[in-house]
Structures are given as structure tokens and as C-alpha cells.
Length: 107
Image 1 (tube, one colour):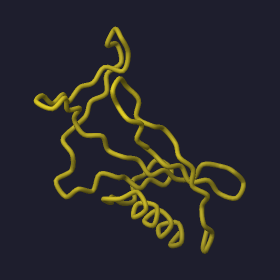
Image 2: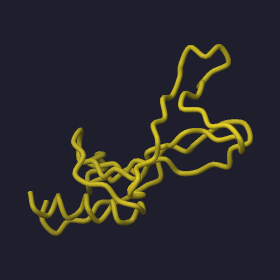
Image 3: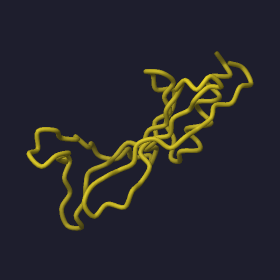
Image 4: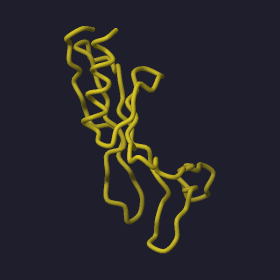
């Protein structure tokens, strides 16, 4: 895919009571409109100010739970993924996008 740039669109956003919507992923599409890559935010524990929860219920009955590990110590909270494999980590989404595009240029 040398020299080709992906078209990036906003994917999932964080949802919940009292949560301002934050982008959790960006999806990179090729010229044919097929998803090729993702840049995904690693969510840390949910904090209420004085308490922190590493498991967060996604529904009212808590049958679906998100497990949220501690944030990476180096601040690299974005994963750059091509297909199913992680090709890099970054502190900002644009840095992860560049890591994806560099990986695709090498292939």
C-alpha cells in the first residue's frame, strides 16, 4: 500500500451518565471504503473524584462489564492497529495514525 493514505473517520465514543463524549477510536478506510486500521484509546479506571473503579458496568443489570486496567505509565494510551495486530503505541491519536501509515508504507 505504498504511498497511499487512509481516510480516517471517528469511531466509537465514550458513553455514560455524566460523561462528556470522548472519541475512543478512529477507523482508517482505504480508497475502496474497507476498514484497514484502527487507532484505539486504552481507557483507564473510572474515577468519581475520590474513588476509582477498574470494572465498569455497561448495562443496568451489570451483565456486561468493561475491565479497565491502569493507564500506561508512559502515557502511551493509544494503540495503533492494522487488522488484528498492534503495530505501535502513542500518547496522542495523530501519532498513532502516523505509526499505522508508516507500517502500511513498509508492507
